[in-house]
Image 1 (cartoon, helix red, strand yellow):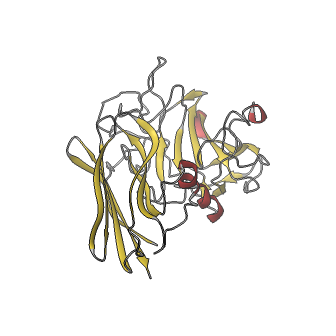
Image 2 (cartoon, rainbow, N blue to C red):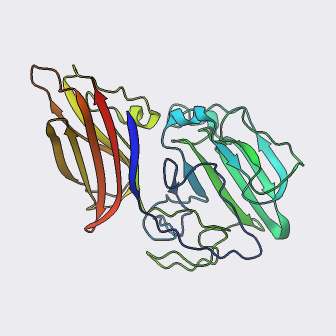
Image 3 (cartoon, helix red, strand yellow):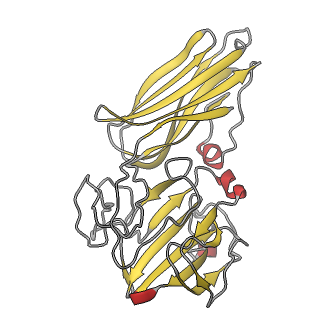
Length: 318
């Protein structure tokens, strides 16, 4: 299967950094395949809100989560980078990369950050990097590092339900949102003043990945990147989309076209706000094999009538 990205829309705008500025802590394109899953929680109540008031956070979240699209991508060795020049003041390694849940919650108690690195910077600034891949930490306590230096690799250690690096930024011990360091919230509009030397793309939800299968896949298989491809003898052809940051009343359009025309197409109304979810549609075949040739799948996420993102893939059946 060959995946081709058609359109990825973002709110990337020039950033203005002050005395302390950051570079991206992940060596991966944040317009795809990687993305920012969660931001700092700006709501002091039991509710949650990111700096754009879109809900891409959870109660008490104190950092920014730079995510991989699948568990399988951990094996690619995606580097975690120092976001600013500083000195290593803390490290941990040796925590296994496992999907966090009730079965292993006790084993990571007190080690929720998993494998990680803490850097001290000038003028009271500090950055922390969590959930690194086991055995990947490359720095030592007391070492001087420069912005962009490799600290380790993205993993899923500690309290992590998906592969990502969690970046926390603090000044004099106080949490700072690098996207909104002055704490002035303007819902729906990114603040011009940030800590980023170059602001990472801000996606208010979107499509993580799409693919084809012979049956409706399990969500864990989609997250893991292990969904088997269909073949000409498959009982059904299914197209699925893995989404993040969806809002109530978003519409997902899925379609699959083959060498003989449309196989299936449908608009799906998303009823609730979700951090992650997937949707799939499919069609069973008749008694003959699926026609040989190229099949094209398309996913479009729409919000209030506007296109948020579109992705497409092709599959060739012999």
